[in-house]
Each structure stands twice: as C-alpha cells, then as structure tokens.
Amino acid sequence: MTAKRRTGRARRLAASVAQEEAAHPTTTTPQQAETQARLQVLIESRAIWSALGGGLLGLLVGLVVFYEQRPSLAGDDSIQFYGAIAGGIAAGIAFLLGYSLNARMANIWIGQRPRLQQLIDTVALLVVHSSIAVMGSLGIFRVFQEAFIGLTVDHLAGALLVAIIGGVAAYFSFNSGARINAFTLSTLLAIFMASGVLVSMIFAENPFWWHVMFSELGTGQAGLTSFWTFNTTLVVSGIIITTLTAFIARDLEIWAGHERAKVAQRLEARADQRRRPTGRVPLATRVSNSFSGHFRTPRVMMVRVLMVTMGLSLAGVGLIPISLHLQAHTIVTAVFGVSFLFILLAVPYLLPGFSRSFYVLSFLAAAGLVFSFLLWRPIGYWNLTSLELVGAAILFAWLIVFIRNIAALVERVRQIETA
Image 1 (cartoon, rainbow, N blue to C red):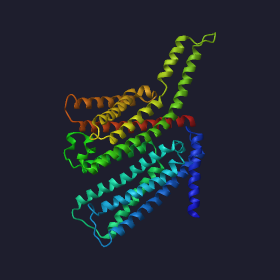
Image 2 (image 1 turned 60 degrees about the horizontal axis):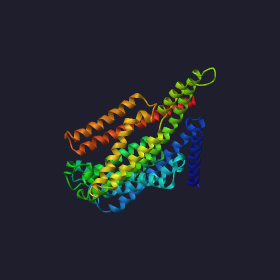
Image 3 (image 1 turned 90 degrees about the vertical axis):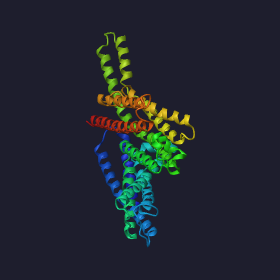
Image 4 (image 1 turned 45 degrees about the horizontal axis):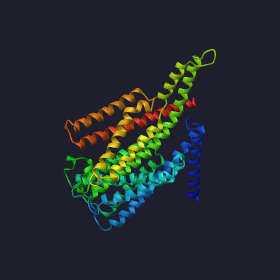
C-alpha cells in the first residue's frame, strides 16, 4: 500500500508541475515553485532508492561470479568486467525510471511528440547512460590495475566494489533522467562521444590509425570492437543532437515570443510617432519598419532545421563508414561541417537579440574552423585527424556557451514577466 501511495503522489506532483508550466510558460508562480520544490525532493529520494537497488544488483552479481575466487581489478572475469555489466544494467533501468517520472510527466511537451520519435530518443538516451557507466567502469579499473600491479581481492571485497559501481551508476542515471535539460544533455553528449572514441582508439588493431583520420576507427581494419564502438557512438550521438535540438528549440521559442512582442511594440510606437494627421504612416517608415521587423525577428525554425541536419548527418557518418562508400561518407561529413559553419556565420541573422560577445565568439569559432581546414589543405601543417580534433573541440565549446546563453535569456524573460 505504501509503494502504491507514493507512486500516486509522484504522478500527482509531476502532473501538477506540467499543468502549471503549461499555464505559465514564462513565469514562475508561488504555487508552481512550491510544487517543483516538492518534486525535486521526491526525485532525490527516488534516486537514493535507485542507488540502493543498483548496489544490491551489483552485490548479488559479485557474490555469484566471485564465489571462492580472488578476482583482479581488470582483465577477464575481473571486477572491471562484471562491474561494467552491473553498472550498465543499473544505469539503464534507473534512467528509464527517472525519465518516465519527470520527462514524461513534468516535461509534458516531450510526450506530445510523435511516438516513434519518443521511442528513438528514449532508446538513444538509454544507450548513452548505460554506455557511460560501462566505459567508466572499464576505464577506472584499468587505471587502478596499472597502479596496483598484480593486486587481487577476495570475493567479498570484489562483490562490494561491483555493488559500489551499480549504486553510483544508478544514482546518477536516475538524477540525469529525472532532471534532464539542454545543458545536461549536451554534457552527456560530450562525455559519451569522448568515451566512445577513446574506447575505439584503445581497441584499434591498427596502432597508426591516426595517420589517416578518425573515420579509420570505423573500418574493419581497426578491428571488430573498434568498428562497432566508433560507428555506434556516431549514430547515437547524431540522434542525441536531434533530441538536444528539441530542448534548445523549446527554450528559444519562449525567448523568441517575448522578442517578437517587444519588436512589434517598438515598431508600432515608431509608426504612431510618425503618423500623419490623415492617419497614414509614411512609406519610408513602413519600409523601415518592415526591414527592422525582418532582421530583428528570431528564426528558431531555421536553427532547428540546421541542427537536425547536423544530427542526421553525424548519424550518417556512422551508418556509412569509409570502407563501405567513401564518396557518400565524405558527403555526409561535409554536410555536417557546412551546417555547423553556416550556423556560426549566420547566428546574428538567425537569432537577433543575443549579446554581441556571443556573435564575436561565433565568428571566432567559424574563423578557427576555416583556419584549421587551411592548415590541413593546402598548407599541409597537420593531418585530417588533427582537424577533426579541433573541430570537435570548437563544436562542444560553442554548444555549451550557446545553451548557457539561451538559459540566461529565458531566465531574463521569466523575471520580466514575473515582475
């Protein structure tokens, strides 16, 4: 009875938050703030229960597989191996629980999208959270094994370490799913891509893959593990970019609605000031207002289309390895780069109303991409791998700053509307 009552309470709180947010998208009422605070406390409580469940799962796995054995930290049949399995399972289950609690009910707009898109996004996010837990376990215990060469532990200590992995993975995955937003999603994307590429590099059978380019990791010559890890990472990352676009576009629409209203009021006031006694507005004023309205109106849909194009093209890079079709692989890679470069150069036109410093940053990022390309061809200072590393760094740095600027603008709109 207690579990059923608590489940009902969670659903009521989440539904209440969703209704209040839908009714007041740009303001925070006292009732909405109180309900959100209660929901956050409940999420934290559920995250602890998820951690306990993940820890119990890891403990049971460890007690069974390490019975009457002394496992090593890394290697075959080690704490690293079984910790990765327990952590991946615990992270996946905990994420689904957290995502269903908050993202499906508190963020009701996600559930209003097409079912197929919801399913694809959920599966992609599930893979991201489980993969981060798996790769985290593989990396951490490999480092510890290198630090404590030859160390083995008894089966109780081994089971306890696996339990810790399961508990930590479940706790953070539940919180991630329950509190997911554009900023946390971009951070997850960066961690996932970096981890996936790193694992691909570690398991690459060709130690000189970097003499060519990163896409070499996605070919059969790099080995089966590297092939599947690299290409799966790109495909899932492309899907995550499209999911991230939905979060970004939603926040941009809140800000853009306020900007459009502000621009309309300003232009109407200018027209009233210059209105003739006959009631007609001079042609010059009408033309000026038309141009001003055009260039000061945010174009959220264009941003959304460009970012979705980036996501789909990145997924295409993983779906079409260079060993499968070099020309098609090159085309989808070029589409990704050109789409991102266009956003950087056109951001003052696409999103008028952002700070000038952000425009300067975008232009510098575009200049950095172009200069890096020139260092590859025709100068020949470095190879394509270096260009791809620089491009990835610029992409994620700009994306994080972009999301933080959006959050600041949306918060300003909410403060203005509340005042």
